[in-house]
Image 1 (cartoon, rainbow, N blue to C red):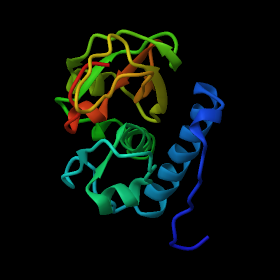
Image 2 (cartoon, helix red, strand yellow):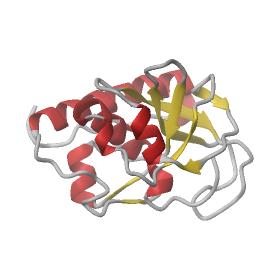
Image 3 (cartoon, rainbow, N blue to C red):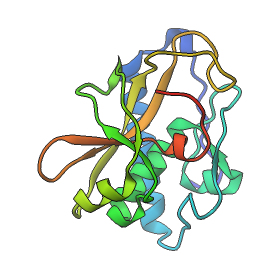
Image 4 (cartoon, one colour):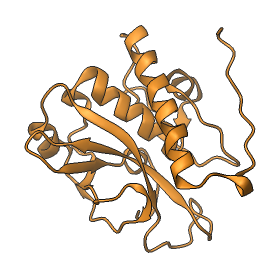
Length: 182
């Protein structure tokens, strides 16, 4: 496979639902892990000035394409940041990152969350190797905004397994400019 992107065309009205989306997210996450392992000098998204940008339609970008575009939306950023944690360890988690306790289910179910600026506190709890992955949430308490039109919407975050048990969540999209509450 060369440098040209792989393009899939999916009819979302015939989508396999949240479980199908989780399989696709795992594929993007795996591509990001591979990218970071083969490009150890790749800049951290936050230091590169990457911002959250909602797309018209859906274009899923791997780590290198996020850097090139200077932006990504929730699935791009969550997969890339989960890969950063797995490949480079807890030090990549920004001190002021938006974090929360992870809900029990992250398979597209509604999950109200209490977000706080707590990246430094979470980073101090983590040990290598970090176990992180992208996770899918259905928006809870949806408010209409420029970032989120009305309707059934999903949001992708990073779920991190804690060494002492339990899980935490990180929302890179919030850190990088997304408005609203998930």
